[in-house]
Length: 71
Image (tube, rainbow, N blue to C red):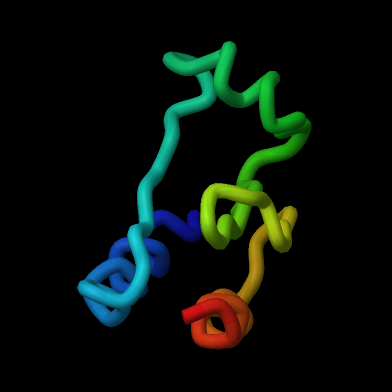
């Protein structure tokens, strides 16, 4: 549901932030490592450390604001 928005943000923040998607069905170990219990879950990292997390569908503006605050 939010995948197209994440793709748009990846384009908009190209060169400023690295945005990746993870298929939790194919990468169960990684999703368990980060405690992903609901989909969608967006985890924001800075310098390799988790600094914020959004769970559930949300508007693109909300995701962009979180990213902008970190770049």
